[in-house]
Image (tube, rainbow, N blue to C red; front, top):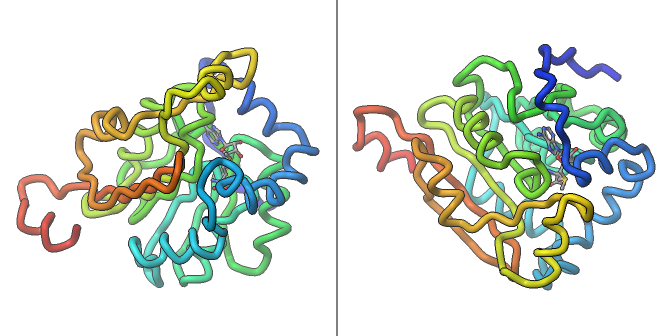
Length: 231
Ligand SMILES: C[S@@+](CC[C@H](N)C(=O)[O-])C[C@H]1O[C@@H](n2cnc3c(N)ncnc32)[C@H](O)[C@@H]1O
């Protein structure tokens, strides 16, 4: 694997949810892309194909040449591939080495950089990226607030954050999957996500069934006009 060596990780970061641990197994990594291609439709967003999701990301975020993007929790590299094909420079990171191997195989020849990192405490320099994509990593990570704070830190002022996650619907299935023994998944409420991103402003929010898409803009301190122009 040509993955960048990751910075040292704290022991506390190895406190993983069952969902996170399941992604460390090679069979999960091999099966993931087939699941991803159908998952949003199965999870209550009929008609939401990968092609439509990619088109939504491109239309709202306009990734392009000269931009540095992080794909946070890349799995099979779907968002990383969309960003790289649009001409952006991409670092695709994941906790799971098997997922990174699978992503590299699928997204070959696009110049994507790969890194095995816990993105709750990445060790990467602040303000490193023009954009960050997060496809459902928020649902799986051990501490969603910590993940969001870290990703906000990595964004430059004026940068943008793209989130896709399963939002809280308060159904019995979500309650079961939130139990540590059954996955330890989180299903955040959009209002909670907004509160966890105090330096960012929501510019677009879209619910398709239980699936939630959001684009946030990181304010440039002391310059509200610039914020409006770029948002
Ligand atoms: C639901 S999958 C989503 C994958 C991908 N973003 C997509 O849209 O297809 C979540 C991925 O995030 C990774 N992950 C979970 N928590 C993480 C963390 N704290 N740091 C890095 N990767 C993480 C998992 O290993 C898994 O591959």
